[in-house]
Length: 402
Image (cartoon, one colour):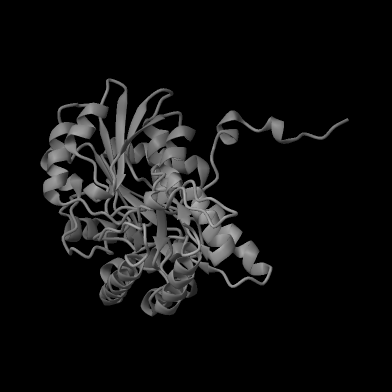
């Protein structure tokens, strides 16, 4: 008798794409294990340690016995800190029942999609988009409807594009600002113009992913949920990973209409229950204490951004804009397509990233994973030396392609 094999997997899993960012990071690790000097610029992870006062708060919480199950939607102390943060930074007013803490913002988005989507419901996704948006919507039974912007518009979609994409099947809109992968930041004026379109339909939920809020070089972060017409239809998604260098802590949270927060609590209660107790205690301190470490980290990222833009702009065929947030650049390399070194041809961004990994030993992520086939994502969450060396390697390899 034969043992069960992969043919027994569900259709939903079989049709799910592997995360391109994680796949590229894995390929880099495999090459490094073989002895190659790989510079990884593929993952969206700050290269800073979690600030000391947050680590100390976690140790203290452990000593105090915070090692047991937490309420599914989060410890009251952490939810109160989130409530304060939303009011302080975003002009958003939430009751504690409207706040749900999850094991990362990724789970928050999955909770929302599982709570609101029925088979065939459409979710408009602004592209370039974070890799998991598309797959999470599909997994929850929804239909991703992608509207795209290119580098000439700073990768920001227009109100007309949004208006033309909305149908009677539209259930939600999903986007990030500051954006992963482009670093683009929507201004309040731009969000208000989009809100005018959205407000014309009573049955559309907005999912606003603001996980990169604290890495905003414009110093003018805007939350679409603070617009009066959006207040009762917006879920604001955030977390501790990016602004506090707490990626491994897995702590995300939402502020949502109460009916939707209750549904997310219900979903999470059946999948994972509450997030780690001592982590939430430490995160409470992070949100309520001095944000100087976060601001210093942002300054470092902004300095690196300028360095990388300067270096990349010197490479023939690479078009680079100047994004106002996150820690990514998303260069357009369509002018490079068709070039060859006599053995290998760069036909698309996938080819480009494979060549950079195998020949330059630099790990990047193709823009095709983010809904744009002309670009690639580079994370500058790395040291200056690594960034300079990586781009030098890229330039050297590309000089061989004509």
